Length: 274
Image (cartoon, rainbow, N blue to C red):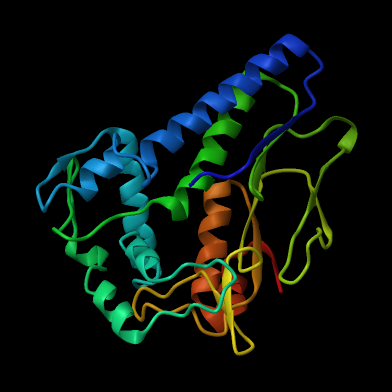
């Protein structure tokens, strides 16, 4: 879930600006520590090591899991937070190391949100399975940090976590935040967004991929097959009121493969596809 965190701020009061930066950083670290799958002292660790026993949930974790459940059903199983175990066989480091079908099949038996049980107070994960909220955690963190910035200053701020971003208030004098967009095969930004409100999130294979025999394999995996989504765009960016909405739509579009644009046309949002 960790990503470079940047906050741009129009706030002229240096003391207030420093306080805002600190508050945003504290919230980003809080979310990272609570929901990262890499730690052994948080709710995700307790769930992933529960051996099939119910785990009591706090309100925030319950909201996150309910959202994961909504996305699972909305995508007809293509968005599945139990599919993170595929990282055991897929490492998207730009190499040509493609796993065998046997290795993929061995991991796929531990995927399936439909086998989990979520109530108003507890979550039960079958033994041998894991959850990974990385697919929604970064966008959630952006929105939470933007909300804090909104409450602390009436001036415009832009919260940017590795290219997923959201602005707070409108800028003075009808100005906008300029945001570059990175696409596959380029080391620099290609094109600029003029962001005047809301959020933008991007999904794609510009940074995480495998390349073998001229075929580029995206890190966006189909949990039903265990393989990268076929014929998916290289990059999808979506503008929406919140970063969580934008991220949800850009990810779901990628999961739809060659039908990505058809899916987005039904959503009544601005989008860019390469």
